[in-house]
Image (tube, rainbow, N blue to C red):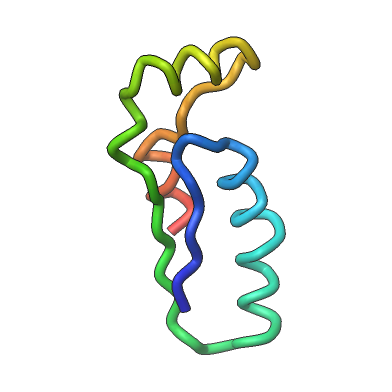
Length: 69
C-alpha cells in the first residue's frame, strides 16, 4: 500500500498520520505500507512557503515524515 501526503500541506500529513494510517492498519493488517511525501520539489518554493507562513505553517520537514515511517 502506498500512503501519500503532500509535504506542502501540513493538513495532508496530519490526516495521513491520524486517519489514513490507522485505517490501513485496521483493514489491511500485515500488508506492507510505504509512506510517500509528494511535491518535495515545492518544499523550498518561495510562493508555497509564503502561503503557508500566512497561516503560521511550514512545509512538512523530512524528519517528521521519517518519524511517521
